[in-house]
Structures are given as C-alpha cells and as structure tokens.
Image 1 (tube, rainbow, N blue to C red):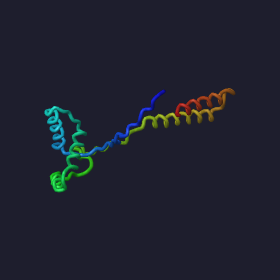
Image 2: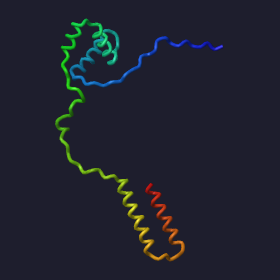
Image 3: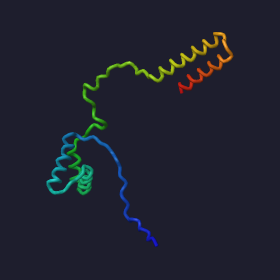
Image 4: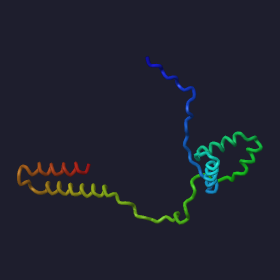
Length: 143
C-alpha cells in the first residue's frame, strides 16, 4: 500500500518582483555590505540583504525608526533622466514599410494585366481563363 505523503503545514510565501531607483552611492553600499558578510564567513544575496534591513527597521522603536527615515533623502520618483545629449531629437523621415510597397506594386501590376486583357480582343477561347489564372496567382501571392 502506498502511504500518502502528509502535506507540509507551512506554505512558501508568494514572491513579488519589484523595481526601484536608488542612488549609486547607496547601491555601492549594498556591495560593501555583501563584501562585509563574506569577510565574516557568510555569503548573502542582494535581496537577502535588503530583507535583513527591513527586519532591522521593523525591530526599531518609534523614535529610532523616525530618525532612520529622516536620514534618508527623498528622491524624485520614476526612471532617471537620460543624458542631456540623448535628449536631442533628430527628425527622421517616416519608415517605409517594404511589404506595403510591394503589395501596392503587385496590385497595380495585376490591375494592368486585367485592364490589358479586357481591352484586347481574345485571340483564343483559352485567353480569358489564362488571365483569370494569372490574376488568381497574383492576388494569392499578395496574401
């Protein structure tokens, strides 16, 4: 008999991905703290380090928490602005869609074939059928 495996009473917490802006100096501090952890004989991931910082903030009293928040400068939200040189906008002509140009040219060619076939008298009985086949092939190729 197969014994059913008992379900784990603790479920893994659902993970959330997020992004944020941080000054380069503070980002460099993350690397310094990671190196400090290595020198203490342990390794730490960036996310683990940030989570440890959150736990430290949660463990603070109200006065210490307010001092820590006051020490952090407020940043402008959103993505950082690009370099001043990158802000120069150069006017370019609209891109030509090659497929659209080919379709227009092919439709014009098919229209010319149809017009020529209808204006010239049919030399044989098979001529209209040949024109129909050509027109069908051209329109099928246009998709």
